[in-house]
Length: 187
Image (cartoon, rainbow, N blue to C red; front, side, top):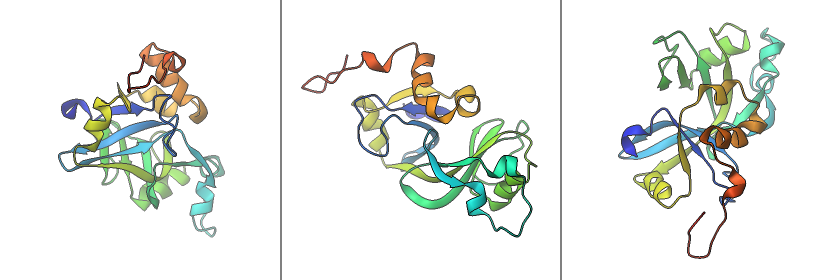
């Protein structure tokens, strides 16, 4: 799985009840020998972008009233912007998802998003998910995640609350067809 992990997604099977990963969709942003990092894409918080920015600046309320997403349990106070940009023209340091989608912790990108000055759509994420060396590959081999190709439509065109079920639809299967059987087999 190592070669095709980048530009991919992880979908929680129905048997994964552990918070905060129950019914999650995660974009894999980094996968190396030392470990992996990803961001949960379907857990809106009660925080808006306005709550995170200084009130004396003028930001576009259309953009700042968006809910901030819970990106994962690691470094929950660290912010990341997942955003669209011109092909090959990321606006700052961070993770390249594909030629026109990146994830960055750069505050200037957050401020550009809040001002409506990004070239495309975006979401703000607080925190990330991480796996130590070999952990994600072991979890995948035990069926603890479904590994799927990256789907841009799932990222920006589908409401947060529908992303988990829609990821199954894109796989052509129903999450309700899974069942946990003693001994670890799933059908």
